[in-house]
Image 1: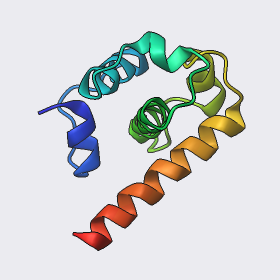
Image 2: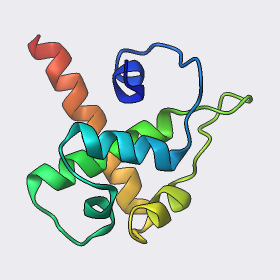
Image 3: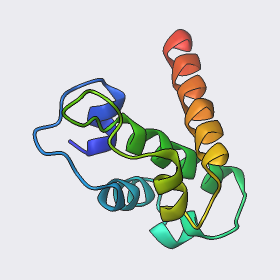
Image 4: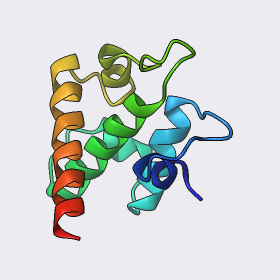
Length: 104
């Protein structure tokens, strides 16, 4: 099972992956490459996948229960984006997930 599906279903991960591995996995699941996430492309397909990667990176928790990766760190990995962009992307993806759960 992929890390993103595990996170989406709220399951604990046996092995915590790095942010770069999560980004690569999300990109692959959408038929993209990590380079797409670093680019200025803003099509819906790329933007939604990028937001999913932002959300997935924030779901990885440290031993203290807090997110392991900060907003600025994730922004740097995704092409030098501002931390507020990552915050917005995380919230947008969470809202889409909530809407899907209600619709299901």
